[in-house]
Image (tube, rainbow, N blue to C red; front, side, top):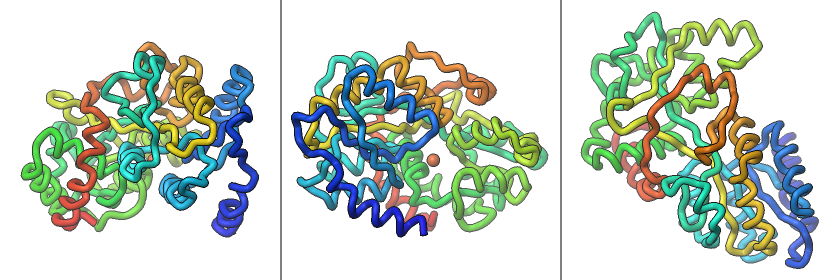
Length: 338
Ligand code: FE
């Protein structure tokens, strides 16, 4: 039922969206939908008088939709999660280059490209079963491929953007040959065929079905903040490690967005992107999903993130994550990491 409603909505919505450049309107296609977003958008309208029309959908569906709408697309700004998807929008030639002193000065150089910008950061961490695994055994991403973890690794699909972006970072740091050996080592260690999302892996680790898995930090934070007693109990069994602290740092992925080439309201679009880099917006944007702001001077007080502690992040440019997506998929395919 839900998907039918979405389809109808998808078919009708473009007619309702303004494509007139002179109107104070912004058409936002967003794969983000958190409770705090209402306040985030209302605040922009209050500051600028620009009304926001929001089309929300799943990440890949929205990208597909913009592609299909082509030059008739009413979309001004596309927001999504993961460097791989942002890179795909770039590859498809959907984004327009944006020159903005505000964005250049507020967003660190490794977290932006010429046509898309990161607005929040998430880290990919190791979660392990405290009763079954020694913490010293799981200090790096490389450790996940070590034969001593045979039969203990659980994972989501190797085709998922989160794993592709991590693999892209491994290729960038260590080269293709080592990356391929890493993929093969992980496949040899699987406790079960890849399935489910990050939360499913954490739960399987807690249940002892697997000893170790990878997860984005906001899934860990969500469970840590849970008020459900069964989830609190679950998390008592799970340890969290920041991988690669002695070397490259923990892999960072982003959520972000850019202005579309066909945007009917380009001025509003740039204003909106700049707004997302403002102090207030950064706090809303990151905190809504238990992530970190990209603007370094912005401090967030989020108990779940504070509980996770401080860590050394990989400083690899997001551009490089984008560059190796196809290679990453080929390596996972060859290794049989489905
Ligand atoms: Fe996610």
